[in-house]
Image (cartoon, one colour):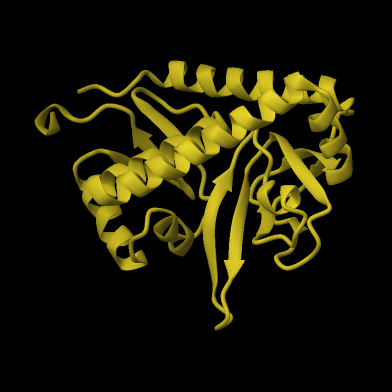
Amino acid sequence: MQERPRSDAFKFQRTFASEAIAAWRRLLNLNLGDRFPRHTRLFDQGTAANTLFLIEEGLIKLTYLQADGKETILGLRVPGQFAEYCSAELATKYFASGETITETRVHKVQTEQLSRVLSGNIEAAALFRTQETADLLNACIEVVSLKGESAERRFERLLWQLAIVQEKEAPGDFVRVDGLLSNVELAALISISPEHLSRLKHRMLKNGRLQREGNAILFSITRPQRDR
């Protein structure tokens, strides 16, 4: 089966993000937001969750520091999402840390401000619950994918997510994904070992699904005829 055309996927993600951001700008009376360079730590695990970060442009990774000192990546947050709202909503400490992996523009929203708006505005409350539900559904999909999808398919979906956010052009039936994450981080996001991911990349390069261009990966959006 042929994949959904990339233009449709890009258009859908941009539309969803722009509509959510426009709504929150109006409901919370937000300005243009703040720009942060790549590798900026926005909040730290274990500190008071007094601020929410609404992403307008760019990509943020959530990481968790385990008791043994090992840091693992939990997930990615994209435009239109709040980077980490559960801790803020529960008035507790940040469960994870948030760091930009691209140049990122975010809106800082104080938890008290958001609470006031949610309690007094039906539209804002409905939008927030919709986004919470969407995130919960995505989390369920991730769990199901671990049980029912191959590592290659999970890697493909991750590349799609990165490509949609970056919106980089590439020739023919390919999308471009810049090397924003290490092999260890990519592997953690799809729950395989870095060694397994290296073997997977090698196989996809061999069958034409991937190409390399400097530090970037070119990812084929359609399977070769022999794989259909």
